[in-house]
Image (cartoon, rainbow, N blue to C red):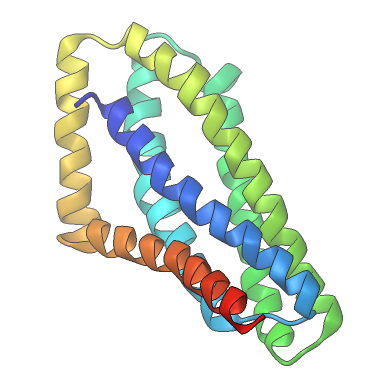
Length: 193
């Protein structure tokens, strides 16, 4: 599997959690309250799987190799992706900061959590579309076969050494739990009606 295919697979997992996050934001508006534990699970997933694992592979490995192959990093697609990674981190930071007050029922904090969560969802969906349809095809065009192989090996090292054995699967399970929790909740609410 090419490195870009690995990243696209990770995108599919991230997109499922983004769907769950959007539904959670909609539920927050309906209830005017925050289910803090669920938001904390989403933050854990987004900060560790999406950012620390996925974005790190892009920033520390993929983008660097693309620059080595002549794709400028300070302008164009790479610069846009880096900027959007930073925007995502700012939205997550704002959620972390507002969550304790939102959990106590402060309406402005609930709205801050909801607003930043929706902004993060919308931004990251568009970001993933740009990577899948513009950046990754560009990478595959400029990479040599040895680039593909060395990046694949480097991605595996990141998983084993920096992220840790079994952590990737832990986040896949967390993603499934976040998605299935919504499905189970909707089944319960339909039964209660």
